[in-house]
Image 1: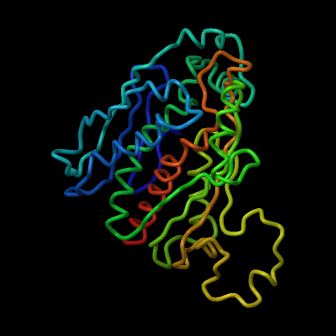
Image 2: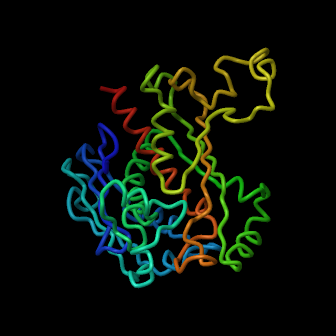
Image 3: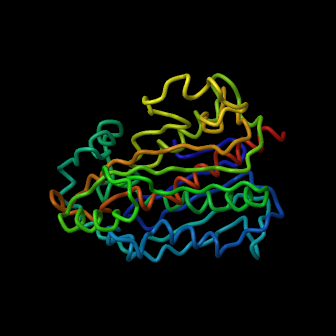
Length: 310
C-alpha cells in the first residue's frame, strides 16, 4: 500500500535509483499558505549533510523539490499537491551484485518472494530514499499544525548503548570508520493537542502513531508513555497521580488527555554496511530519521483533527 491517511491522503511513488521519487497530497483545503523555504529546510534536515556518519549519497543528492500542481505562489489551490524530487546521485552499478544476492535484515528477499521481481538498485522502494517524499508532505501538515499551536519535536536520545549526547559524535565516527552501523532511539514530543482527540478500541491514536512510525524504513519498535519501562510499579505511577495521568504519554484509552504526547521509536543498524557489502549507508539511521518521524506524526495528527472537526 502506497497511500496514507483518510482526510489528508498522501501517496508516495518512485524508487531509490529511478529517475525521481515523489508524492501526491490530496484533501488539503484551498487557501492555506505554505512556506516553501521551511519545506526545503526539513528536506535538508533529513539529508544530514553536515552530520557525522551520514551516507555519502545523502551528502551528494541535491534534493530539490519540484512542485507540479496544487500550489501557486505558496498558496494551496484545493487540488492535489503533486511534487517530485529527482535522483541525481544514481549509481545502480554499485548494486549489481544484488541481482543474485540478498542482504540480511533488508527487504530484498521478501520483495522477491512476494512479487517475483524486485528493483535491486539500492532496494527500490524499500530504500530509505523513499522517505524524502514523506518529509515534504509532512512539512506541509506540520506548518498548519503550528498555526494551531501544535508543535512536534523529535530528538535522538540513544545511540547504541550510549545515552549521553556529547558522546554520540565520537561513537558515530568510530562506527563509520569501521564500515559498520549501529542502532538508535528517537523520542518525539507533541504539544498543544487538546484533550478528546482520538477514538477508542480499534482506532486509538497510539495505534495510528505506531503504524506510521513502524512504516518508516528501519524502525523496529514503538512505545508511548512508560512503554517498556518495567522498573515502575503501579503504586509508583498511579497511587498519588493527578488527573490526567502524567505517565500516560498524553493518551489514555486511545484518546488524548491534553498533556504532551510522548513516544519513542527504535531504529535498527543499517543493513548495507561497507564492512560486508558495497553499499552506501548511514552509521546510525536514527539521526536522519528525526524529520521523518515528525512528518509522519504530523500527518497522523492532522488527519485526526480533520476527523474530529467534521
